[in-house]
Image 1 (cartoon, rainbow over the protein chains, first blue to last red):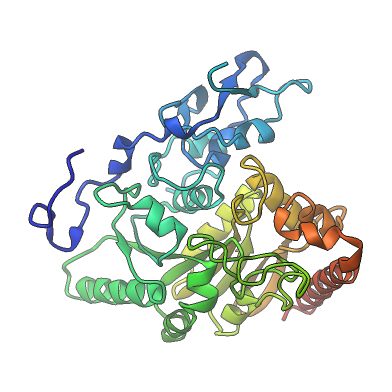
Image 2: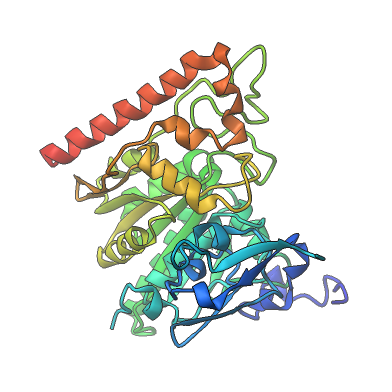
Length: 97
Length: 311
């Protein structure tokens, strides 16, 4: 985005577009990437509620893939995941590997 | 109709705090905001005191908020939202607005315990219909981890550095939830993001009261607590289970503990994974670790007595 001068900004620098932060992708911050193993997922959605970056796509109450455009790779989801029979449904792997 | 408090039902609601915000990876605060807004079934207008949440959620031309949101200075989030609420009441009286709107102010512990305390106290006393949510990470994390009056006893910060002269902060935390309850407000509560259901129930309950409400929520900060990026929820759970951060509510002056840990764990279990308490595990500082445990036990016993006598 081209920086704007003060004359181009709305009075008071009000941001008029709600939720415009979606245009800023934070996925490049990530050092570890989460991988979802669907076979171990019990659809508890705890990863969804605990995700600080709203990066877990849920449709009709069902968990889908990670939104890697925004996921910062903190790993909270992987740590909190209960999984099935002691096997976690989320694993963190180093980016670039 | 209110959305059921199940994750499945809640996941169908629109997130009113979006991704693309620039809080650190693994921060506790965005999760808290998400939970507070998801639990609220009304249109919301929010004010935000200066702090991590404010500076990272609205960096010029980008906002993560999908609700009307006002950035205010450190000291006046409560004053700002009380002004907005007063205008809303006036417009309602004039018949210019008929919607039921809820007013929420967010502030960190610096903007709430310290700098914003006078305006918060004023708003509580004047009786505005608002909810003040403090996300308490226990120091001025945004400006570089300076001590605040919410910093726990023994913690290492840049303005009370642990070393040869002092072993970290020497004073105990201010009990803000009780200070707020002492304003005789209808509802004050303490919550933790690890116990999401408890947190959301408290938000729902708070919105049912007309008048000033206050919620204090533990918000782990991996930068300031010197912990890992993935342990925000785990640490807040340890905080609750060690009774460092008891979950309770004070409704019209009556205290109720909403969660009693089955096995109360030593507070050292909560402190061990955090680098800010590392020095307390050195033999020379054993006395301070003991003192921290005594303080936590004392506060917990006091709270239990308060809950038993219904006062």
